[in-house]
Length: 457
Ligand code: SAM
Image (cartoon, rainbow, N blue to C red; front, side, top):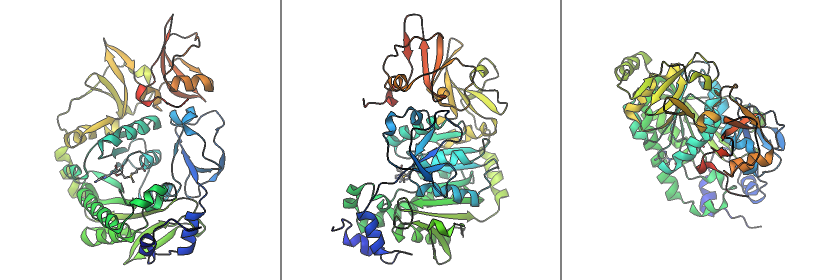
């Protein structure tokens, strides 16, 4: 069979580190789809999963290959945030984070190019509860799916923002870790999306490369001296990978970090001019094309502490709520604070309370922590975010439903079942909340967000 990869593309990869042309072409011609998921360590279902697990992804603690791709949409557990469908190679970010960052410390993290949220949900599962993750997406239409996935993941220490990378210049030395999963020419995903092959051109690779440099230049100053920068793409092109890494250590004060990998994993280490990069080729690993590199910023972090204190204590429209009337909605946790934001109540870890006004002064915040609901006549109307949060109290009335009722609920259809409870009731599937209903004497109202409802029958 004649392969569909254009000659110009293949010849541009000839000089790639560890590139095996024949094997690479074969991996594209004889493609058996590889599907993988990563489970949410904070949301363990008591259902045995309906997913057919093949084996664990060797570089991931919660990632598994599946034997086949199921219809994820009709599995209520995906809507409950029990797992995320993620390409196996990109889960290697976990190994990079483990080796370059103190994940037990209280750190501030920026995931700059975050939608739809694969890397952000992975980062969130690895950082400490006292840490802050700013999950940013510049393209407005993609922020909704990012917010949805972050909400389903159930975390309270994530702030979703919608900003251009240049806006982060207003936060000098703010972050301990920045992850840039850059927009790229996308050749690493050709096997999954053959239509994208037609879009590939050397001009586009060069355009992407310039954009990647610009994005990195924009955020360099917001990383603390001593902080870690992680750069990744799903492209095979040297111009978007090793050349960007080399440019970074030449033009800015960064050193390249070596990552230990198990030789059996077959991840290829590239080292051009003392700059390490990690390449994933589909003929060598079970997954798609990916590149990742890590850097440490040099310099003295104490200088930045002074800069940061200047932007602290900004005036904010967030008010600390002393009232305890809302505490019944969440599990007892002394490390959380309740803040009033307009008519809404949000819950965030106390440790990030003072970061919010700083972020507000520089960025457009789409969502912060867990918005547990709005106050109407001094009463809290619980939100879907609360239902999805891992903080939700287990004293809230709840009912476990079967698959059919769960899917009806997720399709935003009316629920005909009769329940003994009344008022706000959580619907659970496999022990995990799907959302609220309000049970009244003559009817049940479905509070699943309409915009998230599943559309297929
Ligand atoms: N990190 C995401 C994940 O794991 O789910 C995937 C990110 S995707 C590779 C790159 C993202 O960069 C896209 O969401 C895209 O909208 C965004 N993007 C596009 N142009 C950008 C720009 N000029 N600056 C920053 N981000 C950009």
